[in-house]
Image 1 (cartoon, rainbow, N blue to C red):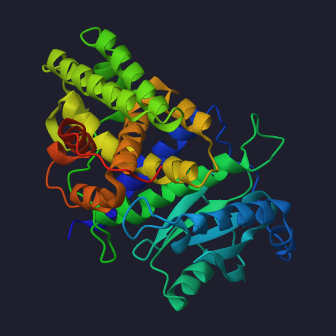
Image 2 (cartoon, rainbow, N blue to C red):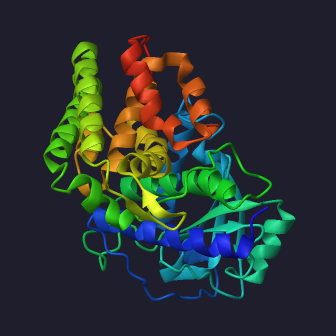
Length: 373
């Protein structure tokens, strides 16, 4: 087992940065609103925000086919609070229903003002009463989420209910797949060991907007977006396949042009190639976007145009969107075999066997069946 304290601090710092980047990319303010203790928990328990969120959360059980084997967001433990109204009160959700409620003498503190997570080995960040509650309830890992930014007029532009639910699903996938494996805890789910992220802040400049390959990147980006449009909106199998082949060809050309470029990485003193760095980021963030945006599309919470628009947004974060586009293609054309694909990724031994590898194999084989979308 790796030295837990160092690993936890490192990955929690990455998580906080990721939440902030994700929020900033959506032009959302990450603000630490004033925290307030409540004499009783009525402001949370009767909150319209809580009622709205619970109604949206209930829709998750309609997902007939999970996008990742044995992963359903509603089967995790979600701790809801409202730091602005009742920071010492919580509602606990499990298996799509209210599992419990708790009033504490001390408030919950979330470093980014929005969400955090609990793991059994991390005890210092939450009130002792909550830690006791987790232990008594046999809860090993939980997402902690504040409703304070939802429909809040002091935060502009406002966070919508869709965005709130989507962010929760995205981060919950990290908490229950990536984090347990990275921290080598006993309750980990299958996840590759090669997913240690490079310096994501430098990846776009080095690999997307580098003059050595920028023109190729723009064409690759366009091919990927058009592939998603043909697949999701127009439902044209042949044109989607043609765009997929174009995407692969352009990407390989870009990687060849950038062969000498290295992205800094704390795990490799020599840095990593753009091909390796993007494979890692498409694993870590692309799959999380597949588990959130992809699920919301399948459920009809995001419509076709919203999903394509999401893939077409923020090219500086293409690893999110490219991962989602490729995984939706795999989901669409693998039919019942999608779990074989995700299982291979989850148990893969190197970055060469990630999302892009599986995507290339399917496109090049042409062995596509009627799938789920």
